[in-house]
Length: 198
Image 1 (cartoon, one colour):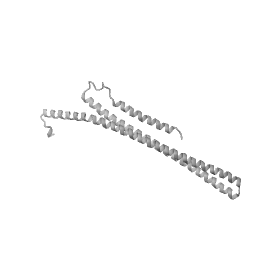
Image 2: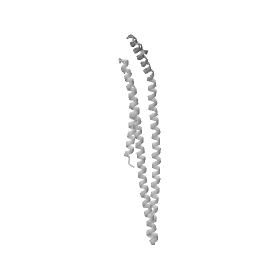
Image 3: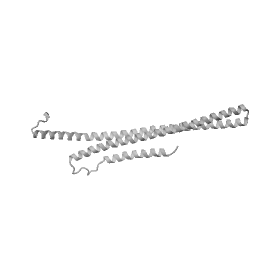
Image 4: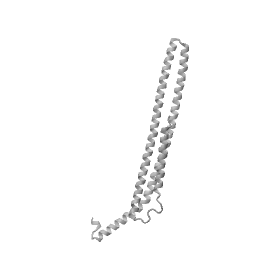
């Protein structure tokens, strides 16, 4: 089993964590930010911030999905190689058993004993390979399940933070909408128009 697929998966995990940390640091504006700016540009910044937050959460979810797909591909590849190895060992075992039968029928006792030892060794090797494969698959399943749980927790945490921020900003947005509504109603009245007629 080569180490490079695992290295790539670890690098993706680190990138996901860095994206999450980078997103958190982008969300904290400096105390001097927004001073001397007009109310309209502050609203735009808040909208851009929410948009960046949503894009960041989406990017994090995409990276997590790619990582899980890599894990599953690695697991499938490992199972495929183990199956090929198992088939080859079974074939070798059948060949050796056939040779043993042939040696017995021809009365070649020494050759038969050698074949029997070789067949036994091959059988033990096949059983050992199957045990190792089962152990590797069990470890991979446990690792994938653990990774799925961790990334699900990260994703839920990110979405909860995003919802909390949107809830915190909503009253300001509602207040701004009401002020604009009142302002334009007043302007329509100044021009002699009834807002209800429009």
